[in-house]
Amino acid sequence: MNQPVRLGVIGVGHLGSVHASFISSLKGAVPAGIYDIDHARASEIAAGHKLKVFDSADALLDESDAVIIATPTHSHFEIAAAALKKAKHVFIEKPVTEHVEEARRLRDIAGKRNLIIQVGHIERFNPAIVALEKFDLAPRFIESHRLAQFKPRGTDVAVVLDLMIHDLDIILSLVRSPVTHISANGVAVVTRHPDIANARIEFENGCVANVTASRISQRPMRKMRLFQQDAYLSIDFATGVTEVFRIVEQQDDTPGSTVLLGQIEQGDVRRNIVYDQPEVPELNPLLYEQQLFIQAIEQDTPPVVGIEDAIQALEVAEEILQRIE
Image (tube, rainbow, N blue to C red; front, side):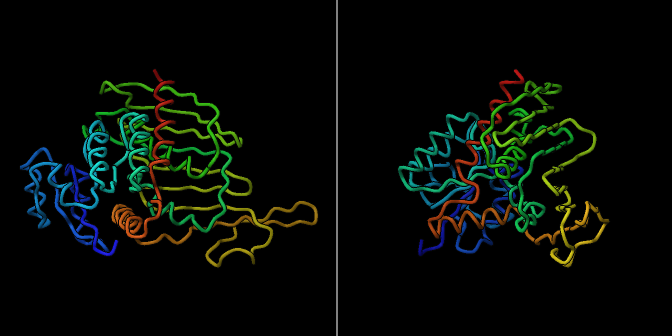
């Protein structure tokens, strides 16, 4: 597009209000405005960021080129479908839809109109993940824990869709192999949906992932550990820190930031055990994913996290829920 992208936000609850706070600072975009069914809430957010408030989602769509949808999950499909049918690009917060069939329908609508759908799997842009771009990752075993204290927000869906889906998306993007088997269990403790869940996911290439999510934990945790031949990686999403332990033939082949921890001798071969804490980029993940959305629209290129990624994560999430039931 030659003109700035007119960007709106539909839904300004907790996450939507953060989206709204950033849309005025995006390169290549101008704010169209915001809409929420709670008009008082929308007016409050708009006043704080000098944004226009619309009386309906349709009215906002008519004055936008693209919208960010940050409403409750059950409404994602209806709003996104309406936006796509009006030829608007859409950014949809995770999970993309309540059911995978709805996501597939959105994919079809967007494909026919050459429109972009980006999905808000924000942990893909966590500095701890971005810092791993220089490493050759081929995990054979993955263990993740995403634990949170109870909050009413997000309880309209199971913890698998609320929290675990972040890790499912990342694991699928790292392993890049078909899922062959899933076993899972979970318990509904304080809501009518599972509030704690664990899944074992087996992949065609032999990798296994053990994934745990809970929204009734006393202490928060957002960690993932990757094990592969000659390397162990620890990722802390909360602190944005990644630690890498590797075995290498010669220390001279490793970056200057590494620390020698020890040596292993096998016959005439001497191998070094090295520790590396890769440099973490300074970025705001939510602002970064918004900017990438605008960039995809401007350049007519696929988004970094598109509808296919979201469908794959949702397919695995749905199977986990079926196994729990």
